[in-house]
Length: 46
Image 1 (cartoon, rainbow, N blue to C red):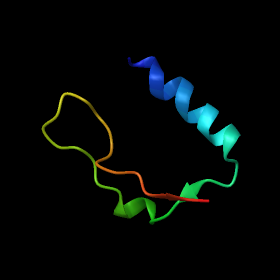
Image 2: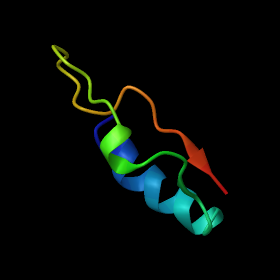
Image 3: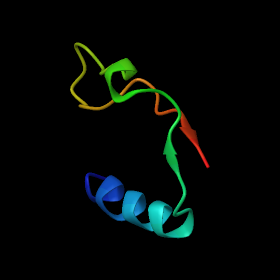
């Protein structure tokens, strides 16, 4: 399961090369108190 983001994200960016963050990087909120590190949400635009 840990390899999924490492494989899926590059594939997603190849499929949608104009994909960009829909909010500034500083607006991203990271999960707190979770054993899984990551963002709460990842708003994107293309």
